[in-house]
Length: 337
Image 1 (cartoon, rainbow, N blue to C red):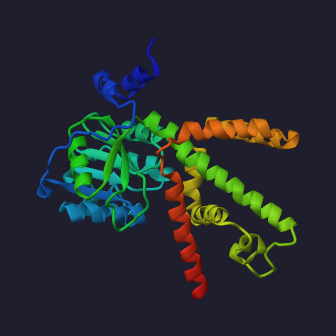
Image 2: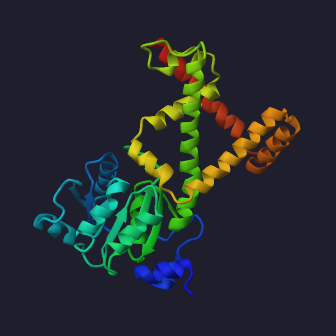
């Protein structure tokens, strides 16, 4: 009987030997292969969006010829099909909800032995969509930028999930590194499992923090006065220590992003439920400790977590203090304006 990896390899017809080469752990020492800018023609579908523009700048800075299409364009028109037939790399920078429809429209119009890649924040379902939407002679690479659409990409990180073909992977690694990116490689399942912790768990805990804060502050005497929208004006904020304010700041940053993107990241990941149930289990344990005033158990877990995550030579205190000092200076500067 076929195991899961074999079943996927058989169903989507990328050979088992390639499937077994998929990295099980985060890999940074990927081989690269130099490619001359004149040898790289890129079509970006969704190239007018923020992330699409970011990757357009990156490829153009490298020297590649870049052609941009919008998701609303007629992707089946003769002019578009001609562009797709010329592209060495076709990049789908579209909302995850639109990925399947776009991939189905263009998947069989791509240049033979070219590369199709996406920028979705999840990878299991997304790479399967790309595989099912294309013939076997199209290479497939899932990519996940671990950054926003910043003008300067130096020092930023991108995860790649190669699922079909290997000839374009070292060339893209070369391009990314030339533009200052650190390239990491993961199997799609390992990617989504890790993202259930660093994205779904984090985001949902921040949503819960905001909802709890909104409910408790609403019932207190220190809530925001009618007509005041900014939590900064509340007495709760004014008496808060810097760490609380930083937590509120990053929660606010999250809540000012695209709601559809974050609902997909938080709820569509197949590993999210396990991560969130684990979080809920431990939160219930801490509620139980509080009700029983079990300081001994709390302090024991406190030390166990400290030993698990931090070594004696870790500079976490200094790093966090630097962040706090910077935030305090920023707060002072805001007050002076």
